Amino acid sequence: DDNVHEEDWSEIMSSSVLSGGFARHEHEERISLMNAGGRAVQISSTASLSPLDMINLSLGLHDTTGHRIWMGARLFLHALPSLEAYFMHQHVLELGSGTGLSGIAVSKYFSTKNIVLTDASESVLDLCRFNVARNQDVECEDDNSSSCYIQVAELTWGETLAKSD
Image (cartoon, rainbow, N blue to C red; front, side, top):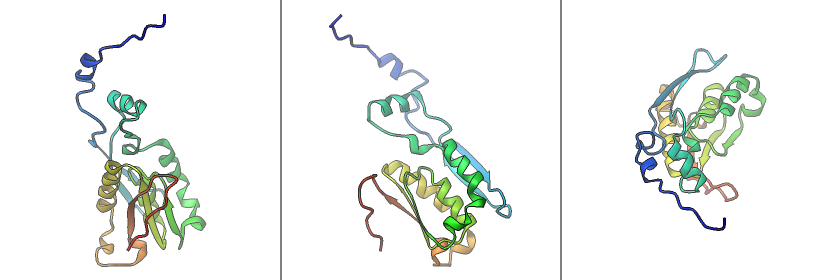
């Protein structure tokens, strides 16, 4: 059949399953870092993507994947204690940082020269900035050393990162 069939999604889109909109950050998680002297990070994220998130993603309307913590970040946290040579006293650039969990964890483990967390979505960057601020160590509040400073910047893959001041 060559006829195009149009579906009416109005009932589905107004259902209680989808009525919440996209990527609510109601999920709070305290993640203890292994071998880090009892340090932990507090991360705000969405627990899962809603059906509306998945529809918007498939249509290219809005990408909410950066609003949640993915298994890759959790696996990275388990490997982090063994990665000192890669991070200690280094410049760190994370592409597609999402919630910021990985970069924040690196800042808790290692003294780095600087850390730049990037993402392309403004709403994800806002979430990342929120998570960075809530995890800033008290001793960093009056310290301008680069190991206490995490920069959050917009970066679309394939484009050049703007220089910071």
